[in-house]
Length: 179
Image 1 (cartoon, rainbow, N blue to C red):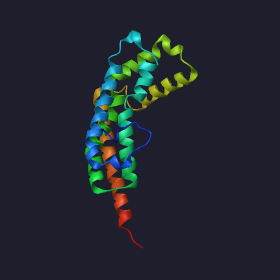
Image 2 (cartoon, rainbow, N blue to C red; image 1 turned 90 degrees about the vertical axis):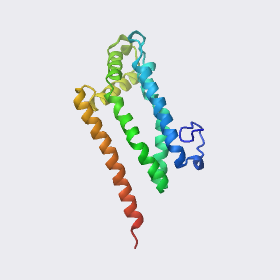
Image 3 (cartoon, one colour; image 1 turned 120 degrees about the vertical axis):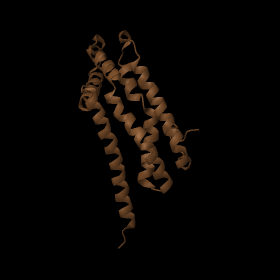
Image 4 (cartoon, helix red, strand yellow; image 1 turned 90 degrees about the horizontal axis):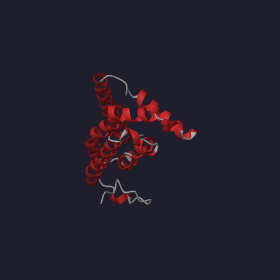
């Protein structure tokens, strides 16, 4: 059982323990990577809105659920084992999220779909979704050379780390303050 990844409507908060963090995040990362690889391996003639843009939107669903629950718990019930677990998985999760928009194969799929005749058949909302996805990729550096993409990934990883450290310091300082 993977409580952080569980898609049930009712969340069993008591099962979301620090011991479950590593296996659940690992499962979420594994599923998300497989889903991204599946999009990247599509044949160009088979591109549809559903198997490109929607599939990308849903690719990390399990990871998003697990990561969101872990961060929620961290914000409402900070405790040492949970904090340690979050910090253990922070780097791989941050690296994965950064890698999505820097993935050259995935970017080619998204651009190819947007340039295909099927894009013209989309509803206005679907076109807007596709256009926003393209802008996300562009703003995240998808068209940059590989060396600059590597630098962006480094910056993203460091930013995630210092943001988490800052949050912990603020919380620790708040908890230590007395009137």
